[in-house]
Amino acid sequence: MFELISRNRKVYTRDRLAFFMSFLSVIILILVYQVFLGQIQIDAIKEALNSDTASTDTIQMVNYWLISGLTTIISMTSTLGAFGVMVSDREKKLSEDFKVSPVSNFKIELSYAVFAILFGIIMTMFSCIFAIGMFNGFSALLDYSMMDYLSILGVVTMGTMLSATIILPILAFIRTSSAFTTLSTIVGTFIGFISGVYLSIGSVGGSLQQVMTWFPLTQVNALLKQILMKDAINKVFDKAPTSIVTNYKESYGVILQNASGEHLSNHFMLAYLSIIIVVLLGVDLMIKKIKKMK
Image 1 (tube, rainbow, N blue to C red):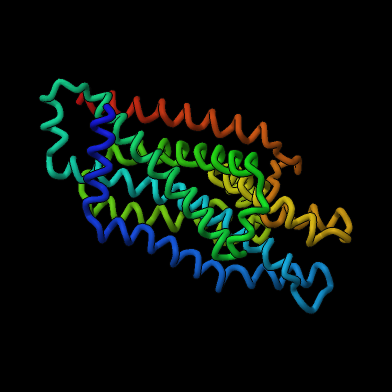
Image 2: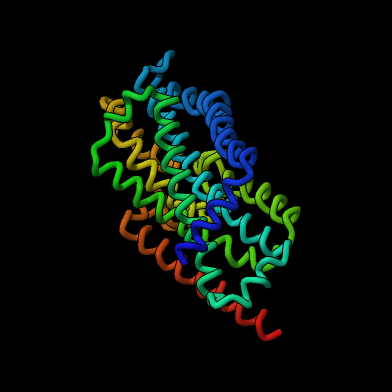
């Protein structure tokens, strides 16, 4: 199977322009985030703290909020992009050729998923670290301990695995590259809104807040915010009342609430995400069985 994973990597990176564009799109996203989304939140914080100016700590905190959202989106889009190899093989009927080889169909399918997850993890971690350097200066990377980076890696791994299990059942019905391109465009936009990246969770109504809260990638986003923003929030709201700090965290999705107003703990969110992954894997296997029976 390692040969299949290596083969998928070579096929994906063979198109040098597409591979370069996947990195360029990350840089474009970073710049768009910083120019448009950052200022909106900075203005809201200045109003909450009754301040006419935004401190360096405030700007850095907002940047970390943006980086968390960016990392969440890329965990999905990069993983989805890597599945393009599988769609291309289907379109070219190469998947039919694989069936006559001694390698089982299960190993072939697994090689696509493993490659997509590994690529997603690498691309997402690179994007996160690169964005911290671009937004707050590369010296800011030293503000995090090894345990912090391991925690980020753990959340990113969970996010890419989750993304893969969300994508797989949908890809069962995608047969052409044009359909895959359309799907990629829709998914990238949808994830940005539903996971509280393009707009804060506190800016929408109660019903939509609950939809966003229980969408799995919103919880991935919240876990990343808690790691990346921890020290920055303490600095910015050092002398602010606890109520203002809590209100900020709730409004901007650093902590999430259920319909009763209770905060979701990190342990609960990790357990919830694990269950969703298992359920979606079951759905994918069921779809494959049904398609084989036809």
